[in-house]
Length: 189
Image: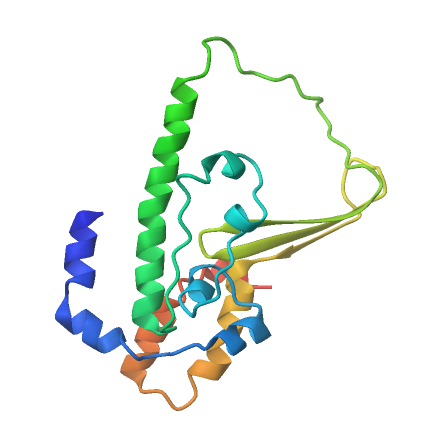
């Protein structure tokens, strides 16, 4: 990671080509439902792992760092993602330390061959590396859900490009698209 830090963030040309380019303000972030490092680079300080902890995140609050910037430009988005990657390595190390402290023995759990979701509707959300994923599940109590709707981070995040791309230079467009870190499979709905 230190090599990437030196190669990219220490590069004067990279910093010059990304600073002040593709500025996304907090109002636009909220209007489009942008989340994750893109939102945090615009000063929107929200991270489910801290704000509504799930799984083991409640036990990792001493290691978890929510990185924010206020510039909202391509450089800020990259810096947030890079620092988030550093923190992810710290979280992985903390989990390994906790695993090492577990008593020896099997950790297998017997599960039924078929899991049936209870009848009704539920919504859950998680923080993924690119933002919020939401899951809406409707079940009639059968083996397969009646309806499942996934809200991916990339799908919402990419919508904000309609505000940023009109009138930009092609060179700036490349930097803006690169700083949105989207997954094409997530936006193909």
